[in-house]
Length: 448
Image (cartoon, rainbow, N blue to C red):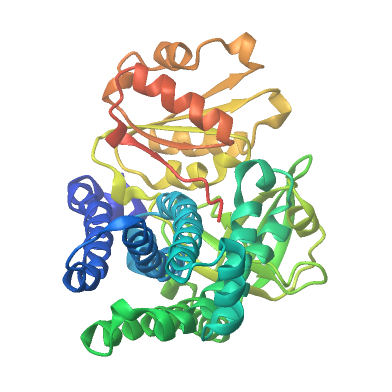
């Protein structure tokens, strides 16, 4: 007999196709906004002639697009519930990272072409013209500071630099983006001739003002109100394996959070060394009316300190976030493939997804397997299957072939995937080669 939680998710198979329309609609809206931003330049530019015209034209276009992209990128990570649930945190993070690289490129191109174009117009050298613009144009000192902050944030966000930073350090450095956008806003109004003083200027104010309001509400006010209402605190910290603990969080009116298996929260534990960073942790068990369980592996300073938390520690929580839920399911046959601490959201989904569910846990050593007894009990209760792939990559061999031996009809499955980046990339390649359509591959990294 299906559990109540499974019954609530049973309609997901039918609802998923309509939910999948949202990412395409969001991208279409962003693209339409970018085209609308260029309309004032198109309307006011009768012709482009000579090097000066091409350079200043390129500077105006890249400036408009950069000014538009900045608030859009902030909105993507503003924790807006419709986006988090409909698009998914992982996809939003990828869009944000991709757009961030474009923003840095647009800002760089804007600075170079504008300074060069103005230098040709005034008959100065490029360096002299740059000094003139920075020190004598309205709001340009602040804009220069904002540009340097933005470029610096882009540098530390590059993959090579990001690997050398802890999550906590990167998180705090990334907050400089907000200051960079605020510092650059003034010069857009004082020197941005394309905005004019009519509807275009009003819409620009609306874009930036609306972004600020949404960020203030969903990143600051809403979490603070939720904290007061639910009063979350640590109930227990239980060791699951060497370096891995489960944190049980209790509180008031937890059912009002409307959490789904597969989702995650950004948690700030109010303890020394932990209260200034909100790290993402996914549920490792279906939501319970009296507690939420998160399983944490010691991968950095923050996660290692979690193991030392004491019962009663207050917890600030942003969430629930993520679209890695049963709403994505369209097939009765489901494969859950996880490795390392990536098994945590799959553990919750294993208990709640309807249909024929198979869970495969990848590990290098038997002692790295998590939740073995729990998974076996859930499998027996609901008639599901659990498999283990143990050993180094050379021993396991081709991942797609190993999965096909367990599931001869692998191509007919919906796949939920969570694990380290290298394993995820390998699994996606293997599953695609095995005939699983990309539309039936779901994964979230919770990287931001």
